[in-house]
Each structure stands twice: as C-alpha cells, then as structure tokens.
Length: 179
Image (cartoon, rainbow, N blue to C red; front, side, top):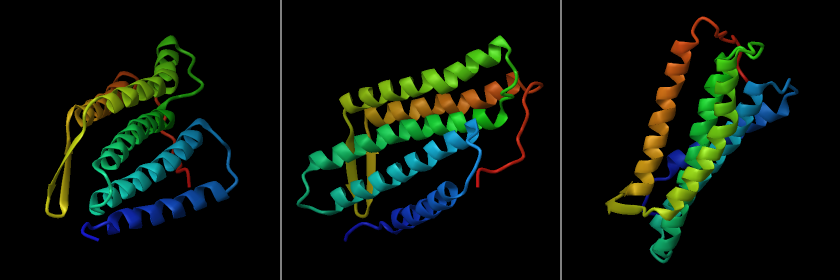
C-alpha cells in the first residue's frame, strides 16, 4: 500500500478499547455520560471513515467518486464530533440545577439547535465541491466544503470560552471522568 495508515489503525484499536471500557461498566447516565457515549461512537465512525478515505486514495482502481464521497462523509461526521465536543464541555461545566433563563437558553442552543445545525451544515457540505491533491504519500483536501467545516469548528471553539466567561460565577466544574 502506498499510504501510511498505521495511525488510523492504532486509533481504531484505541477507540475500541475505550468503547469497551466505557460501555462495559454500569454507570449513571447523566448528561455528560450520554454526550461522552455519543462522542465515542462518533469518533469511531470518523476514524473508520478516515481509514476508508485512505484506502480509496491508495487503490488506483477505485474511482475518484468514492474518494470524494468518503471525504464528504468524513466531514459530516466531523460536524457531529465538533457538536459533541461542544456539548461535552457544556455538560461538564453547566450547573444543571440552575433554572435561570440565560442558562436554559444556552442549554437549548447547545443540545437542541446545534445538532440540527450540524445536520444542515453536513447537507450543505455534501452539495459543495471538495477537491484533493496528492504529493507523494501526502494528500491535501481543500475546497468550500472543507472551509465550511473549519469555520463551523472555529465558531464552536470560540463559543465555549465565551460561555465560560459569561457564566463563570454560576459554573460548577465536576471533578470526575466518564471512565
């Protein structure tokens, strides 16, 4: 095989071990554990799809259509992974007993509106072009579809610290890990 896929194979093994350890234990299904479970499943699908993209690129007889299709599926999974990371950060820091209007609006935004936005952006990404460029063993993916995914991630990365700053007096940081 022309491309180096050891990282993806190791990632698949690691995420499988993580999933077995996480799902094998009995636990209280709190909001942060539910989001973490979604994140584990979505991360597995992202790494599996990345593996398929590399296989599609490395086998010359595979049509370019599959390379682009798997790339766009990868972007769709990335939207949901970003949403689940965003939700996980919120679930760990929000005080779930606080019923203030501002907290309720943000919880609604993070847990109801953001997944719908991820679905909408995934559909838009499927419609936008995605290109790839090979340079030896390296593959670069670019285009409006990829840029939209980056912009979506930037917005989420900015929202978490802004939320944390605005609600710093009401937040409670839980001293626990999901495993």
